[in-house]
Length: 114
Length: 113
Image 1 (cartoon, rainbow over the protein chains, first blue to last red):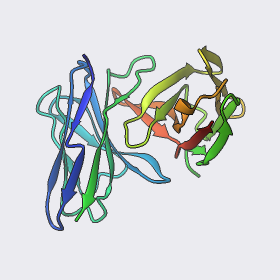
Image 2: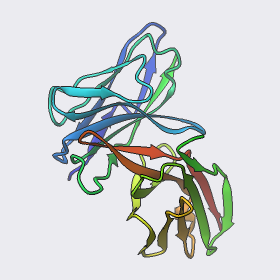
Image 3: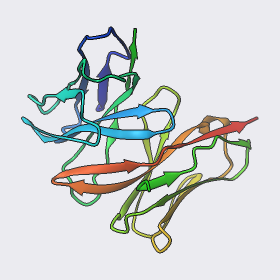
């Protein structure tokens, strides 16, 4: 059963703490993405990766970091530098850009600050 | 000006009604357009995908693109309570070899019995 999994479903962060969100895909997709979703603001791109060991900043990368050591995995770390981390985080993947490659999303992780 | 504009709603319609959801975009270079459906507390799922101008139909859903006016629409016929969700329009561009989606803010739809 191909798809994208994200864990945990809910995550609580204490002030000053770094937390890591997991994203795994078994679709054999080369590209992976992280988005943040806030009410009334749609989805905003945090980071994306086109290939293993390579990633680029999206529109709102400050306070976040990523790694891409394996094709299947693209974890996101929310660092203590991110002052407003409460949001719904979505991971997506796609094939490499061709004629209309589309992105498929995971179920999301809701991050809350204690 | 946002690249993709979408009325956030909420939009409430009775069961069986025809629903029209709309977006406008600013970049005339966009060629691919998507509609995603997102149920509460879930990830978005791809609903419709169209290239350039014209219509595309899939069951009760019709996606329409008018590139001359930079206007994209999603029509839902015979709406059902299970259609209650947030609908996100998106345009597809490219950055290097990765696709880049630009989303509207989403329109929340409620179909009532």
